[in-house]
Image (cartoon, rainbow, N blue to C red; front, top):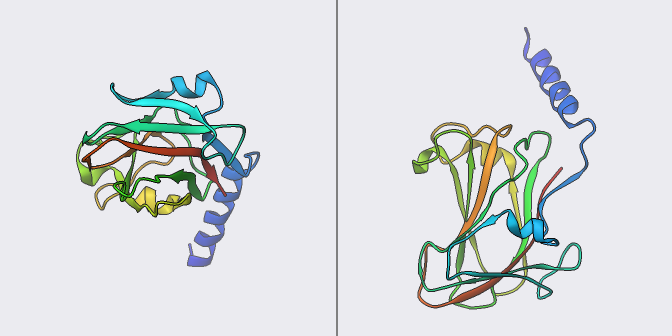
Length: 178
């Protein structure tokens, strides 16, 4: 088959995958008690609805991490199939100057224990509200090991590598977009 036909088949497959899907798929907008129940964190972390940063609905999420190594917020029960979308997006704000870099980790249903078998990226923090936008192609490429399966995404983790003091930050509108 010539390269033109492969290209056309790829475009057709993408269009068929996207048929019937909304332009935006909310992963978590932190509006309901159910939204909060789909989060995993460890004590003594504190999570609560907040109006400090709201991009969709009536509230976002305030996250209070203690000082320590790898304080992490896990979004579990995420939509498994991300095919047909182009970006992972979210809005965040870490007003404390000690919060310089937020890590984003995404695991699929495969073996994600090794760094090379998952996706991880760092987001420099400005101290002002900011928009996070990551191409799903970049996520699928992972960290250089195996390709992540966008049809079987398992979880999203937001974390700091280390905090020297308590950090409060805000998150809202975690979503997939076209």
